[in-house]
Length: 233
Image (cartoon, rainbow, N blue to C red; front, side, top):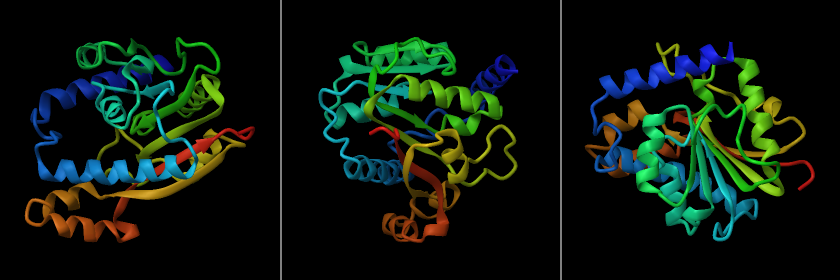
């Protein structure tokens, strides 16, 4: 079942790559820049509150790293590329990530069997990877692997949909209650984040400030940002 779910995810991302315009998620679009900054602010706030900053000198693993976008962002936040690692199902995306971050340890594979030893990383991250996994068993396996490779005083940074995308059966939102179940026994500190992207695309092009004001309304935020700390930390 896990193999078929992994294959489904790869097929779905290949479909998106074919059908979505190349610059649709580009940072050169104001709406994407604003959404990224909203995401980044939430993540930095949580990491700071959990005592996980600065990132310099820390080993970092990104689950579902894609082309390395968030790893590059962490490099801007003083993380060292030579201490970074990432894994993704797509060989094409990993190949692109390796060109952008040649010092990082980037692998092709499924995160339910991570190719790194126990307690290897200070910070393990995932950005909208779990929402693409429909198999409950696979979600639990990936969560266990994330915990296995995490150092005792490390943290997991989580950023994913808490509201499902209407009409898209290839993804499924994950509520905080499910995050608590996946990481049972851990401390989970979370906050809602990110103005609903369809709404952001309607308003940000006309008025950047409107996007920031609407982001202040909790029920208009579609994502959950969380820092997950082992019970022994």
